[in-house]
Length: 77
Image (cartoon, rainbow, N blue to C red; front, side, top):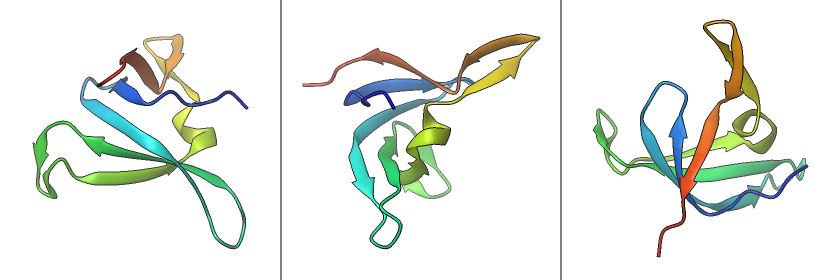
């Protein structure tokens, strides 16, 4: 599976997130992407999230076209 770059990604629904890194589940060793929301939500400003890497990197169908669930937009310093 491809390597995840740290930086800013845009979700296919429009909001932006910053990937912090990749973590492994202790028992299964499955890889999870750790990322934070770059907006304020009901979970607070910059809420942290995890999602299985396989799902993070998957494609979704939008208006009949396959697009990345998360699209890399650039690195952060």
